Length: 188
Image (cartoon, rainbow, N blue to C red):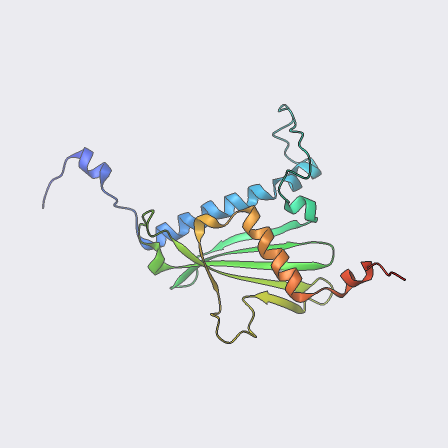
């Protein structure tokens, strides 16, 4: 048995198994997404942390679009570690007409320590359901496209509010809601 110094022991990555790495990455992503929907907590008055802070005033044209602007509410977000091959994060949110499910999964093979040259990748599946019937209306990637894989491959660090909003808009555009046609302007 080899005895090592305590300083060398601390520097050694003893607890960094692929399972721990993927679990940590998904938990951090869950926290980031929960912070995106923090405005919901403020609306209901349960927890108001920023009452003493001055509110930022900015022009709408310069600000980026947010989920609050789109009227989207977070229903749930949970990390699942039940699969032997993948850990996943399932996020459910909805607006007035539809409900959405975002599944982000990481293969345990991706759980090895990553460098800046080779960051951790995740798989994304995004589905849209009718709020009344829970019938699936569309999904990204589309199962109709035979040459595409079942999931989108994305760097886990690239997933932020802007990316998720772009994904939602892309899915909404691909399903072409019939209600949007009502707002067309007729000209004579």
